Length: 264
Image (cartoon, rainbow, N blue to C red; front, side, top):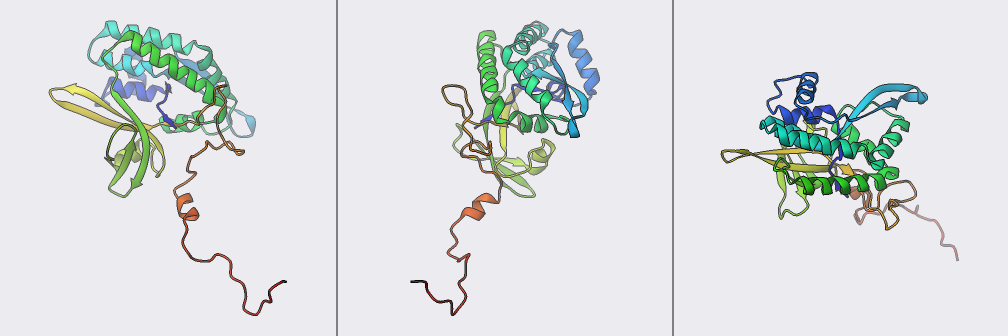
């Protein structure tokens, strides 16, 4: 079940603040802090290979992206209100549990949304992620801000050198997206979970962006993830080659040598 990221890196926040990417990430974060449009975030240390300490990672509630968009429109009052709501989400037990789990996982550094989505798909985080997403949805409804773009989750269903086709929940047809755009977002395989966003820019213009989503397992009434014995969410396609391997071809895969007697 694809789901949008409830936590993001600085890169995603600054990208919503400066669409033309005319500022560096550090300068963008500094500007948002000066405008009180950024929450403190959550900082932790990753584990590298062989259990050695890795680098420091700083994550933020995705409500900071809403605050960054408000600051871009020079609505600093709304931006401050959103950043305060983001800080409350970051202080929640669910957010703290997620960060504690991420700090104990070994692997490469979190370089952006694609790396974060992959790590957050761990089955042991399903319950905390679901809880954090519910709180985030309530916070957005309570704030009633107009900076949240329309969002749809789905999957990549086809991919060529030119374009990808994305199937989104709630939409009747597939959406074509340039392959270069997908690759830049770190989404480069059929079956990948994605979230597509439409933001109204004014004067009849609309911006479409496609980003990695979390491939979250469903959870039961107890908050336990529904996964198989290997930790893979039920119903998830492991790779693009799996459907081909499982398809009935009519070609025998086992041949009995001629002259082999039947066993009675």
